[in-house]
Image (tube, rainbow, N blue to C red; front, side, top):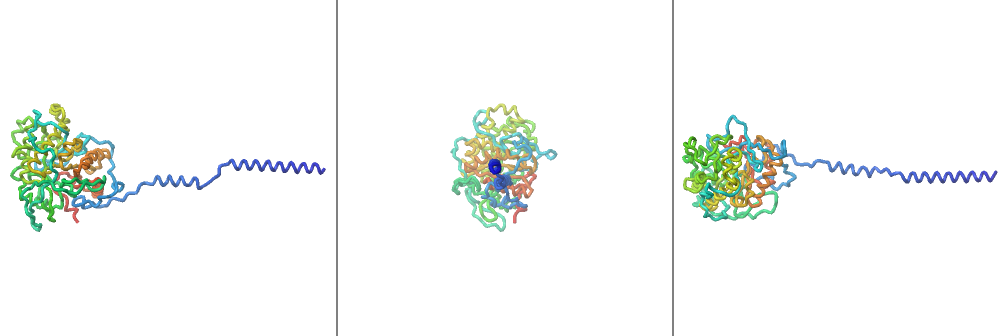
Length: 486
């Protein structure tokens, strides 16, 4: 009996040992449950998906966008929201016409909605001035503009002249309205912030600018705070109402006594019937270089800009437009409609086909015109509006003193509508090419929405451009500064 009892105890103990071993194997094979391990990745993913925080846009437009230095200069790129495109992110072909030259008889056709141009390379609106590429001259391959001018133009603008008007500090008038360039601050190495400056370019000191072409009021313009002012040579396009030396002396002095640069608007790609050079007989007996009327602007006609007849009207004789502007005492010229070659390719295919390199023709025209101006008036300034794709040509880029751009951020697809990111990027590619060469970049936006004005001010300050906010109707018939002054 004792033997069987002992055997039973031994069997029980062995069974317990086997059961214990099996349980140990089972527990050791199961994966441990650890809340710490799973929680951490979830927190990390949640943190990674949090949207980047950006400061809200101010509800009212900053005065500096219209007059004076921009207070947003120096912000980091992350704080400057780039306007997002509406609709397609590819450069849209349609483009709205922008404001036009002086004269009351000129302007957009009233009953028509803004039309557009099909230039993809240039994001600039359809206006009286845009610029094409390099090269050629007249029909015989020769330019009517003198070629014996030094190739390296002086880039500074003339010093101050006497000012007029009550309650303004008096300044002695200067005898030479176009002095040689004076040194300015050394170039900046930063890729953001203030405009890159180059010694000798007087426009690099401009931190504000204004732009008016119609209904000019001398007293109102003289009271503006802007460092740079673009106006028309004449109040209505005729010689009789052209600005005189004493008018320019008054405009060249800011209310605080500082010197202001004054440029004259000049369309070199379209003939305007309200200009002094227009011959009424051209309506019935057109010269060879006169083409069709711009469908967006009354009394503005495309021209064969390479033709010697047209170029002589623009430059090279005492009665030519540019030479009159120089003789009047303007500090420089603001070239517009340099992109007319794109219009010709669209509307005047027959004329366009006679030239193997229309873009090159325009580049040569601008370069020759600039040389002539600077040979007559060292320090005379040349600013090209729009046609930024022409800045790829080094000869043109080096000959001008600055570039201006209309509707960089808003307006290409409708009044105050944001441009597509691709359109903005395409334009900036060329504008920054000029900026890196020490050429200031001036931007005009046609806005009245405070939030959009503030956004444009931030964006252009970060890009290193100088911004002017014009009235949204794009008529350029008044200077926009009184509403926003403190």
